[in-house]
Amino acid sequence: MTVFFTKEHEWIKVDGDIATVGITDHAQEQLGDIVFAEVPEAGRSLSKGQEAAVVESVKAASDVYAPVSGEVTEGNGKVVDDPSIVNSDPEGEGWFFKLKLANPGELDGLMDEAAYREWVKTL
Amino acid sequence: MSMDAESDTVDEPRLDKLPLDSWHRTRGARMVPFAGYEMPVQYEGIIAEHLWTRENAGLFDVSHMGQLLVHGQSVDSALEKLMPGDFQSAPDMKPKYSLLLNEDGGIIDDLMATRRGEDFYVVVNGATKHGDIANMRSRLPDEIVIYYMKEQALLALQGPRAAEMLDTILPGVAELGFMQAGAFNWRGHNLWISRSGYTGEDGFEISVPGIAAADLADAITAHELVKPIGLGARDSLRLEAGLPLYGHDLDDRTTPVMAGLNFAINKRRRVEGEFPGAARILGELGSGPPVLRVGFDIDGRQPVREGALVLTGEGNEVGRITSGGFSPSLQRPIAMGYVGISFAELGTELKLEQRGKLFEARVAAMPFVPHRYHRKGASA
Image (cartoon, rainbow over all chains, first blue to last red):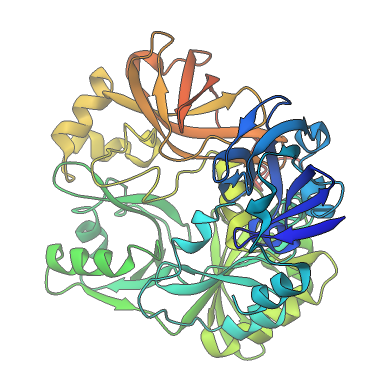
C-alpha cells in the first residue's frame, strides 16, 4: 500500500487498483471546524481534476477534486453524517471516497508523504 | 482541493498592527487581514469559541473599530443633521445605536453614540472609519471637532458570566444596566465601559489606552471563565443574534427601513422630518420599503452564504443573501438577506441558489438565538 499526496492537499492511498482519497491534516487545519461534507456516489465516473466532493467549514466552502481518474466504488457516509471526523481524523476515518483507478500512470509525479510534509512547511 | 477563501485575502496592501497583535500571536491565534489590520480570526476553533461565549465569557479584541470624540457648541443638534436619532435629549452615559445617513437616506455606517458630558463618544466600524471621519468633517459645521482616538484599544467581554467576572477586577461594573456606560479606573488607567455588545449576550465594551490593553487582557483572561475569542466566532454570534454587519447586510443604497432598523429613527425626528433622506425614509415608513432584511431557516446541513440568490418556487429572483453560515448553537445553517416586500412575511417558502444548487428555505424570525441582555429590573 502506497500513499501519494497532491499540491491540492489531498492524499491518495493506493491498494491494488483501489485508491482512497481524503484531505490532509494541513488542509483540515486551514479550513477550521468542518460542518458539511458531500461525497460522490458509487458508480460515478470521475476524471482527474473534476469536482468530486465538497467540504465546508464555518468560514469557507471548498471543492475536493479527483486527483486521479476512475470509477467511484464508495463514498464515505460517515463524514456526511458527522463532518467533524474530517477534523479529528483527516488521514484515517475522515476519507471522502474510494475509486477504481482508470489510469495508474496518473500517480506518477505525485509526492510521497515525506516530500509533502516538507513542502507544506514552506507554505 | 481548493482553498479560495484563504488565499483571496492574502495579497492586501500593507497591514497595520493593533496594540494586542503579539498578545494574540502568543496565544495561538490565526491572524488574517481585516479592515486594514492583522486580526485574530480564531484561537482553538470557531465553534468551541462561539459556544464558550454563549455559556461563559469571551474576550474579543475590536480595536480596529474607530473610537471618536465629537465636541463643539451644540454638538447634539449638529449630529442630528447626519443621523436620525434623538441626540438633543440624549441623557449622559447612555449609548444609542444610530446610523450615519447620506442625503438619499442610505446607510454610510452604523454606530454607537454616547453623550459624555460636553462630548459625544462615537464608535464606528473599522472598515469604514476613515470614510466616516471624512464624511462627518465635510458635513458638520467648522466649530464641531472630531478627534479620532487612535491610541485607544477596544475590548469586548461578552457572555452570561461576563458581569460577575469583570466585577472582580472592576468593582461596580455589574451595576451598569444594558446600554449604560461609565468611567472606571484600573491600575491608574482611565477606562470607558459600556454594557453593550454584538453577540446577543450580556457583556461589556471597554475602551482602554493601547499601552494598558495587554495587561488588562491578561487580567481578564486570567479568570477561568474567560477565553480569548476571534473574529470568526464574533461573526457567527452576531448572525445568530440577527445583528446586521456593515458592508454585508447594510450599505449606502440601503435605508434604515429596508434594513428593519426602524427603532433607530426617533419619534420626534420623524415628526420634524429633518434628517438626511427624510422624504424617502418617511415614505418607506408610511407605505413600506421595496425590500426588507429578513432571516432564513434553511433545510439540510450545508451553509448558504453571502451572494446566494433568493428565488420563488417558479425560479424568479426576488432577493439576495447578505450573510449566512452554520449556526454553532443551533447546529444548522442560518442566513439573512433582502427580499421583495411581498415575500418578507414570516414562513414564506422560498428557494436559495448557490453555485448552481437549490436549497429549500423559509423566512424566519430574528434573532435566531434569543438575546439575553441585562435589563435592569428584569429577573436574571
